[in-house]
Length: 518
Image (cartoon, rainbow, N blue to C red; front, side, top):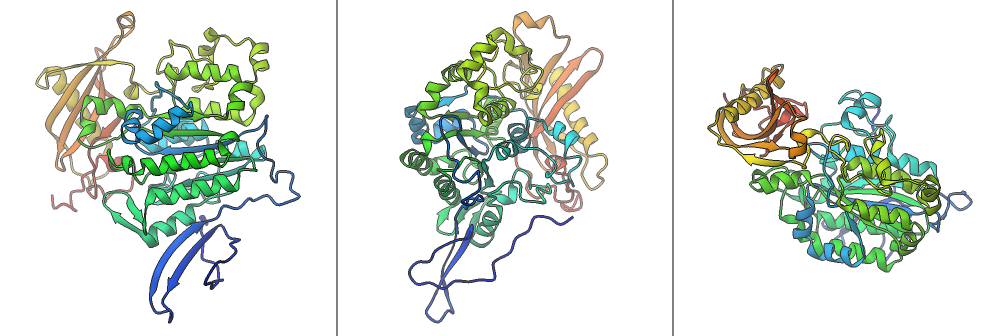
């Protein structure tokens, strides 16, 4: 199968002052007078409108019944860490009356299972069932939310600033064809390959003379400016300052605030729904081993910014969104909300009046997600929201002694499960528990306790060889004993320990015997 590919143009334009650019992406090289020494090299993006004058979609700018959508995502940042690390940005969002979801809960371990529901409305398992049967398949047969916007005449865009670990490309095949109108992946790859430096963990922190996030800040501004008179949907994802380090987002705080002030100053705020979001909190490191880190990993952030005219015209929908700030929400709800933004008649005041939608009706929906423009039940459960039990933040936990029988047996079940997962890979070492770090018992509300015929334990343990640090939820019932439910999380980085296998899920657990001389 021929995959998406790109190449440099055969044309090179020499200039000493300025030149008109008609291409999407440009590489600029400055040399010494004799051309023997490269003094400067950089890349620039110039988003192009795929529609031309005469096309019915050309310059079909946002109006009172249409709204552009710009989504900007941050990998690995909890809501509270976003507030801690980016105070200038969050203060500006507050000043602009942005709406923040306080009960937004992740639904999967890492980026992929948390972004897929936003973009498709499906879980990872649903994606595999419907359009992505195995890890060797591409995603071209899947329907994304940008396809729905495209069908309504929108220009669509999707990009990430760290393409080597892109959501649909990290240990996956990605797309065979360009999935959107404006697809800056070729640009990002070349910038990363030719100018990327300071590769400490997973990310190259700098691109030439700039921090990596600034390259995408500039791209987002260029895209938004170019599409200001054109209906557009853009989804941009940044990893560079947030994926590897808990405290590095602060470096990009002022710069990102300036992105928002640019969008407001240039009038883009008045034409666009702006959605800022993350996928999960920090998944590894010393902070993650704390109970606060345990909670924050499960609680990412979402902010909504809408034009003032939109808030006035769709006042009922916005009142519902405000109501839902303190309700349990998930990525599936973001998808349903985006579907309403494709067709604003679904959230008009008249629609709500005619339908007489009541708060006690909304929990009866059969879908995992529910539009945030409709009231969400205060009694919504994680199950109803599509949040797996192991990621649900609606329980309290009671610490247990790590020497207790139930703690030890729960930890043993985790090691047994890991070794069972690796049983078909003889190159991976058989793991043993070297230390039980913490153990907790999940407690459910008193009124619910009689419904449960089991107990859930959360254990953190270290294994050998390799010093892997793992966390899992283990369920005890009289019939089944101790059984791991859901995914087993890795709380420290595995580096090259699992380079002998390609399965992206099992890389978390495998310690290659031959490579490390065992």
